[in-house]
Image (cartoon, rainbow, N blue to C red; front, side):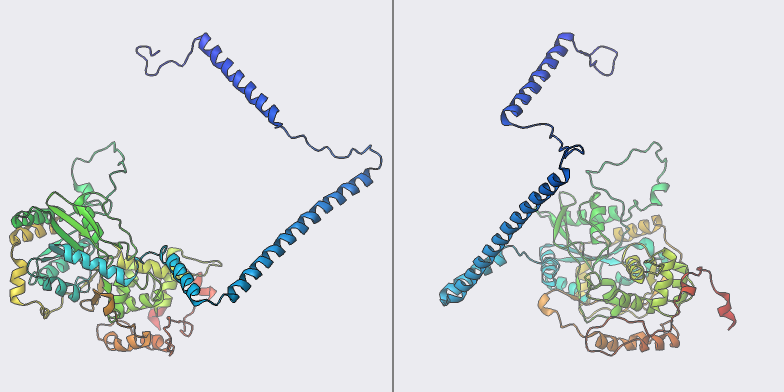
Length: 550
């Protein structure tokens, strides 16, 4: 009975009820003992006390017991061998019967049954190029507005001419919109220049997604102290800028179409540009799975942003093997799938950057080649194997994750003489810009750029872009992968441009490391004159000032 002015009810029972419960427990245990006695079950197994020391002929009794045990084991072994021989004879008879059967119709029937059995469990490979291309085409065909997501660190390299041309060929009913993501990793001046450059073709929106969105099923922790202003929230990864303007723009365009069905917006782009993060930020919850690794999204996924707008997530565009090595390292799935060496990708990226900026960004001393850089980087991060040997492979994976994920700040300069692509005529430009409120787009971009905290130009790494990246929309258009030696010969002229910051001695060392083979090779660094002995492995990361006085 619950008493007043008390939070919890009393657990005390009346004596009659307590005695009744105890009696039921005793009766139940008594019944269990009777059943066990009828079945002959014993609760406690009696322990074998063995032969006492005072017993006569103790040694003989023990010897007889040992002989009985050996006889039992031999009998078990004999039975086991007999069963084994029976199985062997049975298999032999089955093989002989199979050899004797020479009926071709029976063989064909057996083959058909086995083929059907093998086909049933095997499903479509979601990581294949054919599947990814089909899912991307589904999104393009079903969408009314196609948003091409571009990484603001290399927006020109994230553009796919084949994708844009395919959208434009579908007709004037489809609109193409460009969205620059990860703008908080690029200097403000650089973002403004890229927006002005791309506004000549399509409407451009600046966007900074939230990286701390949780699912609705996960309850947020209550905070004792609530911030009185929004300055604290803006300095964290939870802040999102540009989502309100983009959502309002799509809602207004959906109202202009005057269609009963919801406006379908397809989100497309290369892997790791922020497609799923854009959808989660617009939705305000974890609707699509996101990840650092490339190719997290495998299939098309529909997300209802509102009653009038429906978002469609798509897998990343498959990069063509004919692209440059830099584009393949940043936007291809070959490194994630193990088809390309991680060391080769790191070596390619280091060639496109200023060495002094890399040294300042990662706080490491001067290095001669990519192997020495990875060795110093592994020691700095504590990636050591058994015996204190630096784990260069783990360091290479971390370096690539920084470049493809939303962590490292680097930027590409806007080309001085940028000409429109061949498929972008004046009529196409006017058609793509019709129906959008361009003044509202400019105002939204200004508000977004005011709220985001941008890095300084001196703290951002200058990167050399290789232009738009070619993509594949059909798996049949996949060209045969050329050997790595031929690919390097095709881009050797590009690597020797005056923008390259490495010295001629470093180039000669890396050319001497290349083995001339016909098979697809991996980068080998055995012949490089790099001192990674114990005297250098365990030294401190301090800068060696003696190198300045040689």
